[in-house]
Image 1 (tube, protein in one colour):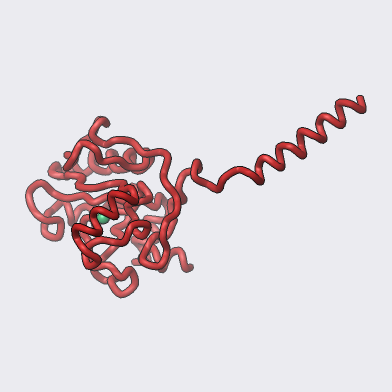
Image 2 (cartoon, protein in one colour):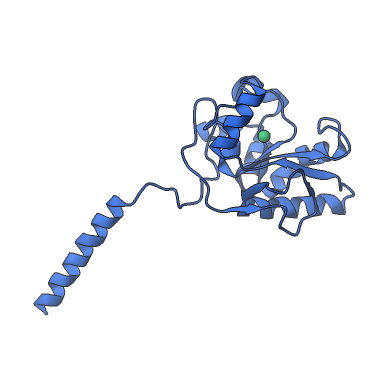
Length: 201
Ligand SMILES: [Zn+2]
């Protein structure tokens, strides 16, 4: 009996030592409310990315290599199916997850006025995407109006609204959606809060 007790004790010490040695949180899903902006870089790579081109989907993709967090791709497909049922069927996903290397290339190509520095883009989370219309620009497309009114029902927010430029530091982007999940998206929509304001509350 004594030997067993000692063995159990050793196992307990060993496992607690192991837990302390474990590297941070890279295998865990990225927090849906994570704030990534000019002041808050992301030091974390999502592990649940799936390729949109390979999915059953109701929207176009700009390139065949766009990936998103699986839970976001699921919410997106549901949203576009419902929009299609209401006659809006010209959606195209232009961009999703971006690696630090991809953001670096974009930053070098577009410059600081149009692209965030690597580490500071929401696209690193796998929770953000740029969606457009195949017909026209999102600020005038019926798809853009529908997204602005309804995306919250599926856990999305328009991350950079026209009336929050002073808070987000980013110009109006009617195409950039961020997944935060329900009920957060509903509360932000109803109370007209940017993510910065919401997480500060
Ligand atoms: Zn974007």
